[in-house]
Image (tube, rainbow, N blue to C red; front, top):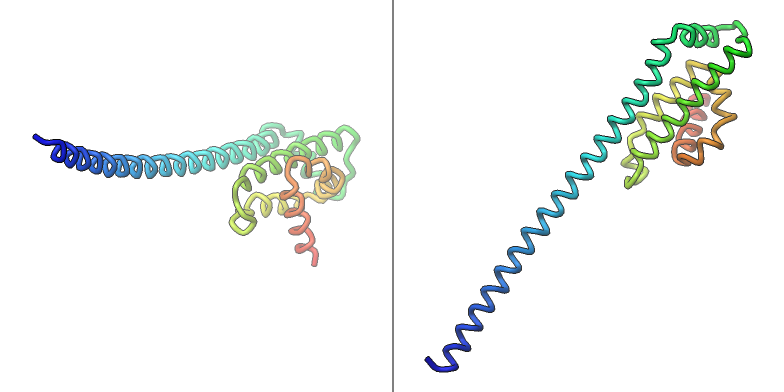
Length: 165
């Protein structure tokens, strides 16, 4: 065998190796992209589940504590709350403010404003409308909540303005 034949065989083997490498890298890039997409979807589902769990825990605190339920009903009516009732009512809603702000902050990550699901804000605004005392607390607490999610505060304020126009 002469050196020209060996050289030609080497070039063919090299070309096949380059093509095989490109095919392998293409497959690996596709698998990596799919894994990244699945991880992102899992993270979004996990965040949604955590949000639902947080809201459920907030509701359960009212369902399990008849005193809190009574205070909420009383606050919706015309009766004045005692100082102790007012404190419990305020703390209950402060907890909700931060739960909702964290939920929105998690759901907004990596999304444009147009893609963002506003269901949390819509529900939250409805709770504020159903509980006027909570709406007052919102006005007092929103600057603190803004540290958790500016988007949430702006969306809630915008929704509240639209409700009363």
